[in-house]
Image 1 (cartoon, rainbow, N blue to C red):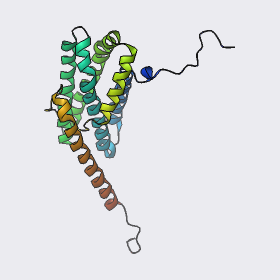
Image 2 (image 1 turned 45 degrees about the vertical axis):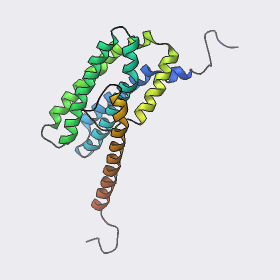
Image 3 (image 1 turned 90 degrees about the horizontal axis):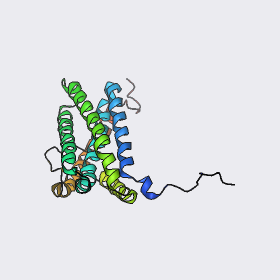
Image 4 (image 1 turned 180 degrees about the vertical axis):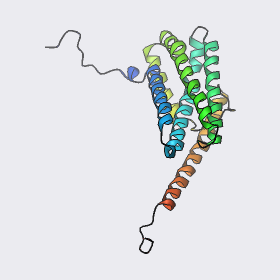
Length: 212
């Protein structure tokens, strides 16, 4: 006999892909990665920063392609709110670009990273307070689910490095985004190959006669 109020029905596809839930999950992941970088050993900071950069950039680009266009159209005062949030993302992207150019061993990197950390946390808080509740009120669950699926597809093909001077609103971002993404993925592949080669060259050889 089934208990009153109990259900074995699985969550709907819309519920599983609700864009707000996906964005909150991404925010939590970014916050964890920022904290991990702060405590990462010196030898792991470069890789930790690359991973953080990729996560933040893909999240921001996908938001600008999928979330904010409909937010501007469907939410009261949406253009003003979206403009403020996108401006915050643009400033964070400029910080990321500068930090990436400097590298983790640069004397000014730590101070710059602390500024980035605070900027990302402030932006996430403001999105969670001003964007997500308004979006939930303005859209139906099925629409939020459809947006979530589009967001995940956009994030999967988004650039992996900051491009602070690229357009951040349609149609410019939709035209230049795929080009930047392709360039970034070639760049990432080359970096991975060079890193692997460097590790092999640094490893002690097992060949006879090389034991010293």
